Image (cartoon, rainbow, N blue to C red; front, side, top):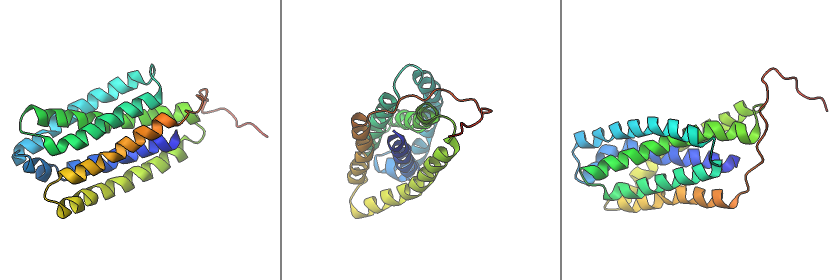
Length: 193
């Protein structure tokens, strides 16, 4: 489960940073002006805030892997759909989907690791995942730029990038989740063995 969530966070970071970094060029290719492309950040931000609250609530009622699967499906759809966005409602839906993924996966990460692995090593776990996130976000824009330079449009590289969240979906469906760890007190003394 650690690697599924870590890869989900990394894939989301890679893809969303790539899409955001190249947003004006990418959406400009689809007929949006620079102002219209920048305006998609508004639904992205609003959807992200709503997703944080919704996924936080859902995390208490739904299994972690169901949430990671749903988030990755939305990310795959947003990534593939970015190549077919048009000015108007499709651009708004694209922004909404991207916002749901960005904040949704981070909320899921905050909930899944303590539940699956407890609090004792949470700092080390989150440190590794943060390193994955930062590294992935550095490569995303480069991958999208190189893919665009090798083709006549963004569509082929977007379709290739949407395979990454699909791979996380496959991994999440085949793993068996670890048993939930009971909550631990911060002031509890470690057991001597």
